[in-house]
Amino acid sequence: MPCESTPSTDIFSLVSIFYVIMTGHWLFMDGSPDWKSAKQRLEYMDRVKTSFEQGDFPDVSDLGGGDVIKGCWEHQYSTAEEVLQAIRLGRVAAGV
Image (cartoon, rainbow, N blue to C red; front, side):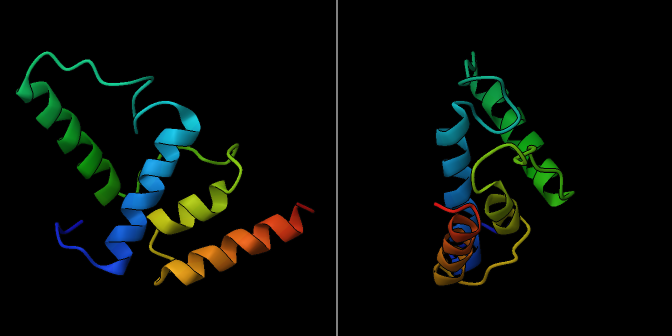
């Protein structure tokens, strides 16, 4: 992903943060990072970037709203309003 702020990159980043909050761990990790060096941090960031570029995302099928998170990672939504509509539709379908 490019390092510029666009609605698409902002949505992608925001749901990545939601993922961390909902699961209690960082993407592709079992917990919080315990880097011993800047090199380890950069290696992790490179691994995540490569995974995302290849369309490899964490499994979110068991998370509430996981389909929306996956859709955001796959750039299915162009605006935050579209994301909110998808969340609302999911809540209605779930009877919430």
